[in-house]
Amino acid sequence: MDRPSASSSVRDAVLQPLEDVGLSKFHWRTWLTAGMGFFTDAYDLFIIGVVTALLAPLWHLTTLDLMLLNSTALFAAVLGALIFGRLMDRLGRKAVYGVEAMLLTGGAILSAFSMNIWWLVVFRFIVGLGVGGDYPMSGVIMSEYSNRTRRGFLVNAVFAMQGFGLLVGPAVAVLLLGSGVPGSLAWRIMLGLGAIPAGIVIILRRRMAETPHFMLGARGDVEGAAKVVQQVTDASAPTPTASGHVQPLASSGRILWTNRSFLLTLVGTAFSWMFLDMAFYGNSVSSSLVMKALQPKGTLITDTLTSLLIFLVAALPGYWVSALTIDRLGRKFIQIMGFSVMAVAYGLLWLVPGITGETTEFLLIYAISYFFIEFGPNSTTFVFPSEVFPVTVRGLGFGISASVGKLGAAIAAFLFPVLLMQLHLSGTMGILAGISALGALLTWVALRESKGLTLREASHERLLETPDDAGGATRMQSAR
Image (cartoon, rainbow, N blue to C red; front, side, top):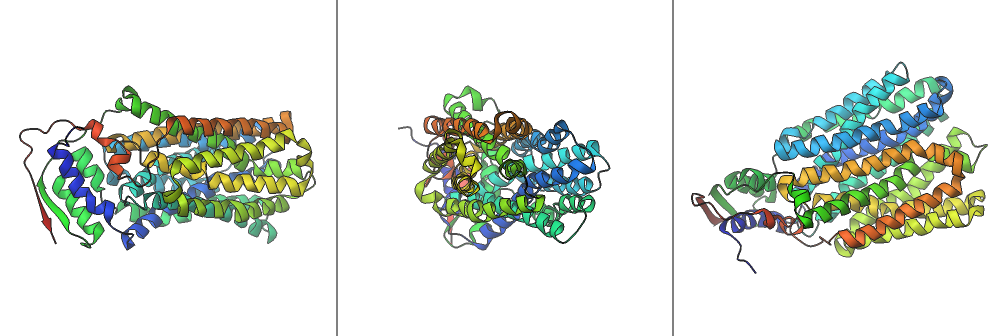
């Protein structure tokens, strides 16, 4: 086994206190700052299903119009994840963080004042750019500030805020419609409210300090990284102080596809996310269509209430069960388990089509699938890419993974209305069963377990380290 270089030892020593420190106020503040964006992401993405149901008679929308409105933000998220993922590697986490929240805020406000479908499509595109950017930005920043034993919990907990967005979206719709607010006004209020949570955290995000991992890996700034580590750990343990620089790691995005290990990991994170989102977003964004297929005579309020109850009973607990168990059970186990249960649940609805005609039986299986989506790949596909790529390409690796996932989501949301009409509910569920089975197989083949490892170990960052340069004058000492 090769001896670690001096630069490698310096990086390990500077970051060790960050990996060993317990949960602190800083961690919870970072979680809230990142998590509010995901609350907004979920609210904005899933409220559009109710909005399109209201707009269909008001604007005389065609099936193509519905497909566009349901999928525009998701297609934009594909682009946003790639752009922000690369920018955060090039310019730094601090330089970019908060810009995506500005897009979310501005896009939501503009969407509420749309005069026709084409303006709404444009403004939903802006929202989607912010949603896509939020994935790599918030996931990576939370990961890089976490410790080795609770990193899965913290990153998962950021994503779990999506569950509250899933809950609040239908609740707002039911409250507005149930209180007699006309549909012509209700949809504008629903879209505009998405600006509030994103707007609250813009300042907090812009004030976030650069992460020590990025300072060391991309800039070689030992002293700056050590100072941030000391602030975050609050001097609760002996913290190294240092001066000088180490050689920055290679930052070319090509390493993700020229190195076989990184390429296999990228295929695993990107396409497992894609399979998950194809099953999940087609199902969720079009939940009102699913409810209508199940209960043709149901009203929009009853359909939305049914969706709300499913989210409350199944989806929301699933997020937090995943967060609380991921550092014990492991990311890989939870992801394979979730995909497998999804495949079985959707397979039953396909192979026993009579279930789709029985409301109670259908909703029970539908709810079980939702629970294991959240206590499964919907959470772990977000955690994995925040850990398994080297720091200088972590944003790009996460961005590619998220964008491939959102591409699958956009395709599903675009095609799901047509599939329901052509294949009906049972046939559509058969397709989702096959997609879920592919996700379980890919996870087993392509992804490595990362629980309990330091971030540098999980990302195999040492593969990018070069021999120390002769002039790398670095001084380390222990300070209490």
